[in-house]
Amino acid sequence: MYIAETFKTSLTPAKLEDIEEQLEKEGAHILFVRRRPLTFKLYASPDRLESLAALLEEAGCKRLSSRELTFAAAPSDGVLPRGFYATSNHPTYVFLHGSWRQVLDLRMDGCIRLDGATARCTLMRDVRAGDLVVTGDSGVRIAALPPKDALSLGADELDEFGFMKATVSSERQVPVIIRQIAQAMCKVRDGGGKIVFVPGPAVIHTGGVHGFCGLIEKGYVHGVLSGNALAVHDIENALFGTSLGIHTQTARGVHGGHRHHLEAINMIRASGSIAEAVRSGLLTSGIMHALVTNSIPFVLAGSIRDDGPLPDTEMNLIEAQRKYAGLLRGASMVVMIATMLHSIGVGNMIPASCATICVDINHAAVSKLVDRGSTQATGVVTDAGLFLDRLDREIEALEAHERRQEPSARAGGTAASTSVARQSPSIPAGPSCSPARKDLDVHDTEIPPH
Image (cartoon, rainbow, N blue to C red; front, side, top):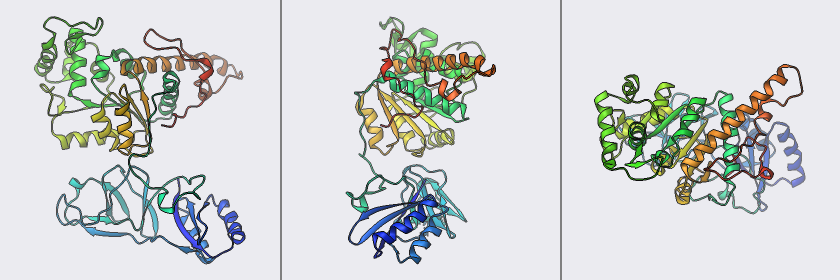
């Protein structure tokens, strides 16, 4: 992770090259952005930036950006001072008490509140009168990796957070992408990371219940964020075999099916909660059953269109956002499936360092998430049910392959390591997925760029 500082100098390129060699030994980089006057950016780690900047200044280079952090007191509860700094989802640092300090709890569309030597991202509504809030962008830096070539760019075009900066293509081998996602999920789980899913009700409509429950049972789901509708239709399917009155096995309408979701809500309300319905034996299958029996936390956020709602649904919007943010804290990966509203909402709550997968049959829904600032997202344009079925089977194949490697590894053979073993298996196509071409296998656990 680097912080970039801009300098200009009258030094000759040869002299600057000598200094550059010294900087590179310290793990820093120089990137030239303008020839006349000679202007460059220094990319250095936050803990080394000031000492290296001092070295450049001693050599006659002039620093062009100010470190002076400006702030003002909030005039009243929930009101920010004029000129407040609005956060992005990229790692952000402030120059505070003589050093660069990372802003904690980072998310989009917040402000930076100072508390002694700590800088923390806070929502407008949570600010209290008298809180010190950062104003302007002086003394604030967004961390980045140095671009490979910036000579063709204006200095103000680099490292700038913004919207409408990425695209999503539907013209990709979806099975290959799902295999890469499965590999990445294995890596996250094995490393003790946290994977949060954000599914919409289309998961039920498109037959994704079995695949999703498989992921839960295998330990790849550590939290679920959704709305009232996902739980309602999952429970309707578990109790009546329908989703919005359509039989999920035959895709045909059922007589009187239009009332099934209301009957499901009524039965859960009579039980008191989803968990109580599971304990009593009323609810014996489905996603919500799997979450309860595996002690996976979930938050259901209500909306203006909800029927019922279920007793577990949080209808207080502010409280729902707070619970969402709490469950997202520490997440290494977030997988959003067929829910534009909740996907964009969650995208605003997570830092860009969180691996983000967005799955939707609608290309525009995937693109909109990226356009709203979640440029780290990997878009997968496909059916929700097919995605979950394929993902579950890919992970099952990875785990089976790993188990086959364990005996030879214990015997002291030359079996591949876990990370390598998990890269090689390929599963046969099921009835709902087209086969993955073997010549397109990707031996890399990284998620493909969007």
